[in-house]
Length: 357
Ligand SMILES: Cc1ncc(COP(=O)(O)O)c(C=O)c1O
Image (cartoon, rainbow, N blue to C red):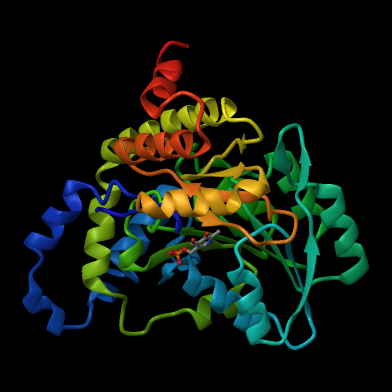
């Protein structure tokens, strides 16, 4: 039985054909050499290309070992023992792990469940800022596991208010609903201590490559120096990432399929009593389910080789997170829930509901 692993927000469609081609064509003999991009006045071809796309100088575009690597660098660079990091309560567990490595003090703000989604609350963040004067304020947009984004208005309000903090904006799920960079340049111009982290792991389906990239404001020279790679970056990874950037149509097509599958799940779960799907701007959905069914669901999914993430986070104990897979996987998942719960439309019918709208 082929397992369907939908528990880690990996992009199940795989990288673009252009990435395979780049790997086939790569001159492996070159790997015995360090990069000489500096002779062309660049740090690396990848950071140069990304910086150009975003309209920022290459010095302010940093590459890292996934966005995980940049998160660690930012926290280890700027958060010291007993200093406060303000972060979302319902979020990626790893933020807290990294903060604990430097004995930072976590203060949590809540995403508020209203209007059928988990919304950022700028006022709450600003009030907590006034109370604790955090060194770092972390915002994930879209957020994992709620799938919700902060509005441009709220983000601007937080950035304007938290003037002395370093604002870390984790955009690991950037691309699935918007590919615009307009907000980015404006934000970087407004707040000099802003860090915007992105990755090739999710949208570009290159999680195993471990490449993240980050734009930083002008006031973060310490981070720029800390993250500098004197002898260059991983040249093979760079080539594959560049190939991904050159395959926009492939990735847009996938994102569109995922958008339709998210709708399919909304329609499908709506027919199951006690299930709710929260709107998501990422490649996963948060699903609330009737807790008495937990064991039945866990066992039923296991029998069918389907792995999703049942959450234990405070306030989300009645929720699971399902990564959006391929069309075939998503249909199988919806069918599985219908069989286990014993009612509702099968996945293919739920897809029809989307198509007939
Ligand atoms: C919100 C968030 N940020 C960052 C990451 C890590 O991404 P990367 O593979 O770039 O390290 C994840 C991984 O799931 C995530 O959910």
